[in-house]
Length: 231
Image (cartoon, rainbow, N blue to C red; front, side, top):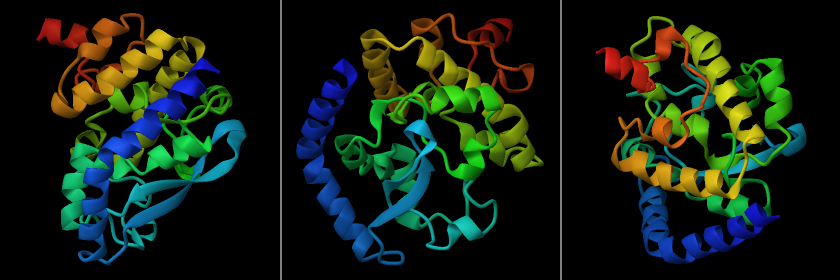
């Protein structure tokens, strides 16, 4: 209940304060690219029920049926020119403040996935994740801030995504669900802002030192401190 009240107050305030940014972005998108302002996509929500997640349009309309589908790589040719900036700064995610006000989402929680990506989670993670509202940001989003770069460098991006990224991301989201608190909620909001400015920061590991350890193959990519110390 406390988190829901904070969601309403903080997202409502953010929409009012950010209107001076959101309105110009909407105008620019309307007159560039394919003329689309918003992109609504089915995502898996609380209880496993689908909902329409809102974003600013940053990719070609038919992008889910092109290339790597709902998985996006760095320098993905489906991303529109203005969209690159919006994605890098995460401004493209801000329309989800409306989803939060509606109750589809929370400011913090497991990131809502398309059905294809949700199915890549281990079944135990799936069952845990759907017990809470998905989030605008969360542990998985913060730890995997460089996910697109990681997959861009891989010879087989889909294998890396399905066999390395999603199983570990599932463990992180499980950890959050099992350790929810007002402290975790507020700390993850602050960390979200921090990693936008410092994407290679490993601060999350200091704030939450008991997070599950990453697989060896991706430890360096998620800035795990033990790797940094060895290096």
